[in-house]
Length: 120
Image (cartoon, rainbow, N blue to C red; front, side):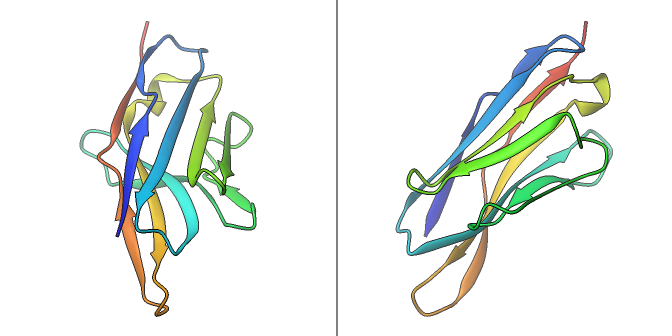
């Protein structure tokens, strides 16, 4: 089973930048799509960005042009570079990965979440 460990959250002023990292470890056969979700207080968890193992990425409309997702397949790590942050980006950010076993079975894995707060 794959475990995901996130890092890089924190407090930043509006207009600032942060980079989140998520490293996968454990028994890895294949990791397919990796992504970042976020959940603000009182709101549902939403997809922020995702990237396939072939490095094809997609973004939520609200972050296009400000956030960039990329991954290092050798390190089994996905990153989220967040620029021009806004107060509405404040949320707990969760890493997600599709963990594929040799049998072909696939499971969704989640990190523990990292808090991002954008405030002056």
